[in-house]
Amino acid sequence: MKKVLYFFCLILEAAACKKVYNVRAIGSNYNYLVVEGLINTGADSTLFKLSRTVNIAAKTTNSPELNAQLIIEDNKSNSYPLYENGSGNYGAASLNLDYTRKYRLRVKTADGKTYLSDFVEARVTPPIDSLGYSIQPNGLQVYLNAYDPTNNTRYYRWDYSETWVFYSKFSSYFKLVDGIPAARQLPQEQVTQCWGADSSTTLLLASTSGLSKDIISQQNIVALPSTSEKLQSRYSILVTQYALTNDAYAYYRDLKKNTEDLGDIFGNLPSSGLTGNIHNINNSTEPVIGYVTAGTRTQKRIYINNRDLPAWRTITFYDTYGCAADTATVKSADAYPFYYGGNPPAYLPTNSPNFAAFDICVDCTLRGTNKQPKFWK
Image 1 (cartoon, one colour):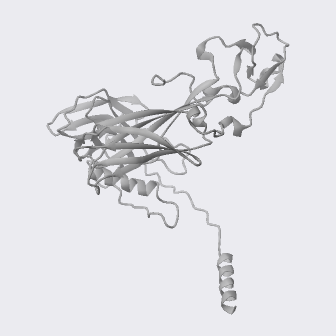
Image 2: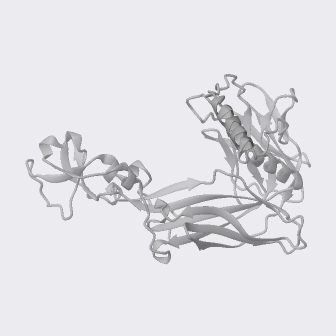
Image 3: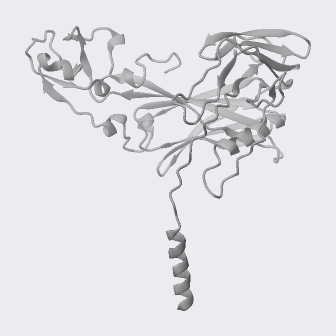
């Protein structure tokens, strides 16, 4: 009994020693160059994005690198310029590159610094065999299958983009023109049905180097909870697959450990030795974030309809926002910029009562686009 009491006292003593520790934000502004993209040896465009790292305490999270000059070079002394498209994006249409050659990227920034990547071999990416999903107790899991019969890929990376249909809380048939309600008549004026979009924010990697066959089976891509608004009506996901070299895979694996697999006492320790394959030619000690790869990519898209899913109750943005409709006259419409109703009259008298709600509850374009994507079907 004495041992138990002694142990209990030790616990109380340890608890009493706890103090709140407020972590100070790092004040240094390292402003490292970040290079993202693929030298595409297939029929697709070659696209790169340049940006700068920002301080964790900064008000902005986006710092594009503007007015840079980018050139693709091969090991036969050929060069292919890329063109600036704004917001740190650079690219060119299909360059018809020879996949048997090696390639590198040369970057000259507006401040006169030159960065050069190592030559890398081009990798031919096998097709995605299939995309599917499985129903889980609390949602669904999207997965992927792939296979390289030549056993040459072995190292894989994926990213994805999502699109889904959603609807405003209320259907708006009127808009305000100079303070007076006017009927919405053109298709582009409708603000009830919209499409939302999102993209992957985590690194998706896999290796078959330890397997006898180069087969990816039911690789998890994304999990959607049963309450997700994305499943309210119709959802689509486009998955892009990349073949990596052993070195590129090692870089992305370490990057994943440093950015995603931290956060608890059992997580991986951060590494300060993470380096990519692009360098400042005049200052080898300057860190540059990114790994330039070359090759092809393959894609596959699937659609998932709500009617094919269990009778889940999705929770939309409007459920949590607390949208409500009020009756208001046109003369008091300044607080309610959008009107809605079931069968609006052709003519609305200036003193006619009508239901009204705040714009966020009736205008879906504030959260998406009312223009249907070209690929949508």
